[in-house]
Amino acid sequence: MKARGSVDWPGAAAAAAGLVPRGRLHPSVVCWAEARPRGERWAVALSGGADSVALLLLLWAHWPRRRARLAAFHFDHRLRGAESAADARFCAGLCAALGVPLVSGRWGGARSARGEARAREARFAFIERAMARRRMRVLWLGHQQDDIAETMMMRLARGSGAAGLAAPRPVHGFGAGRGQRFHVRPLLGLKKSEISRALRLAGARWREDSSNAKGLHFRNRLRLSVVPRWIRASQRDALSGAALSRELLEEDDRALEAWVDLLGAFGPDGSLAVERLAGRPRAVVRRALHRWLLAQPRAGVLSRQGFDSLLGAVEGGACVRHSLGPEGFAVIRAGRLRFEVSRRRGTPH
Image (cartoon, rainbow, N blue to C red; front, side, top):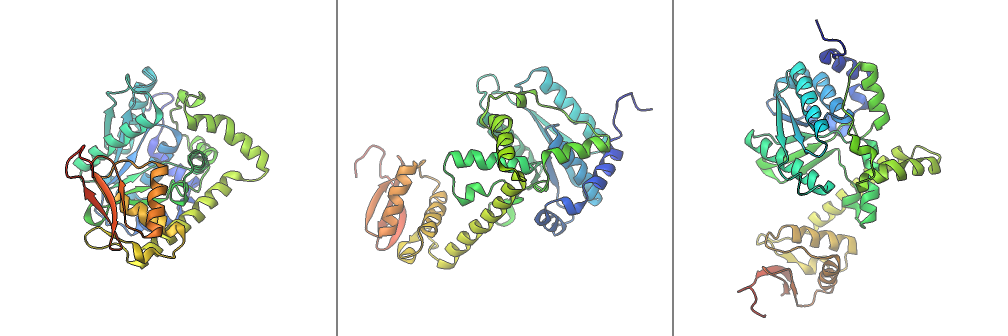
């Protein structure tokens, strides 16, 4: 007999799947998932909040043949004392009821570093390490439409381009070949209110993060104060509008990537043929330079002013030697951009 107030989690998963059928999940995710190898293992980021609980229930219900290959990952940030511990116990009970293994971790640096970005980095670092040990390459995340609007506003504030504004993507691949990893987000077509309502009707429970009600972090300030006013002022479905803009920006981003590929400007030695970028739109040159910089493991962090200066040099095509930090230089010579390692730190060139 179930204890009073306990949840029939398999029944809740079936009910949630009826309320949120596969057709409501992001279509590109459904197509991607159907094409994946049968033996592939899937990891689910599980915080205990409504979005991640709905994600686990829907995956368990909509892909029954994958149940034996699912695993959930929960990270205790240790920022909310007893609440955080209760989150971990809740996730353990949910996973046990569904027969899904739960991998848990705790943040040792929580007392010395409490920033939102640091907490997020620690969580993903734990998940990536745990997935690597288990040879897992697919991580499912519970981002939804409200997250799209919040992320877009955060990135607009720091001047992001199409690539940054196209986040969070439904299917995002990292790396290449057999080591390629994926972040997958099937709930991007749903609002948070729709997800919470479906869980309530399905008889499910979830954990509320009390820190979300405080304006300590930028995202929370947007969520509590800015986004609701923006929705009211728009007098339309602004969240769906933001989701559509994200889709269009992702299309533009892919077009830029394809254009750079067609130019064939990258040599087998990692150099960039500057002459092949001559006369191209600045957005294309910017994308090619950004890709080149990402491929330089010894390059330092380039400021926006430094990037714009190097971009101007690439557009001009003239010979130049531009510092990329203590490890080396970006050098344009004979029509190609290369990374040259410093002969010795501190030695003038």
